Image (cartoon, rainbow, N blue to C red; front, top):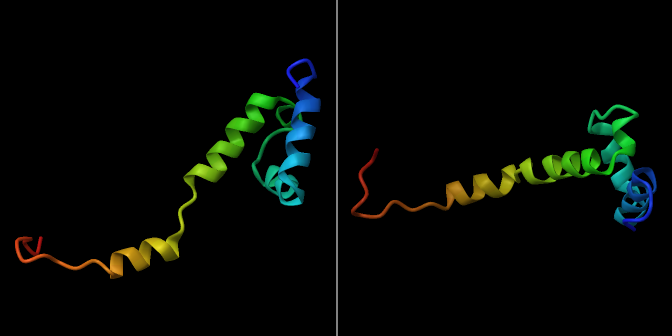
Amino acid sequence: MTAKTDEEQVDTLIYLMGDQADDVLLTLGLTEGDKTKLQKVLDAFEKYFIVRRNVIYERAKFNNRVQLESEPVE
């Protein structure tokens, strides 16, 4: 794959990731020129997938927290 152009590498990446990857790529706010640059697309995908948190899971984890006897209220 390294011998191929950036545009071909991006197309292959999107194809391998599936149909939803194309929709995600459209919502990333990249310019048309940036959508053909592999490093820009990889950085945008990394930012998109790593930053997201599962709010429901975080709330459940918070609500299951039990205060120990040695812990102050603060």
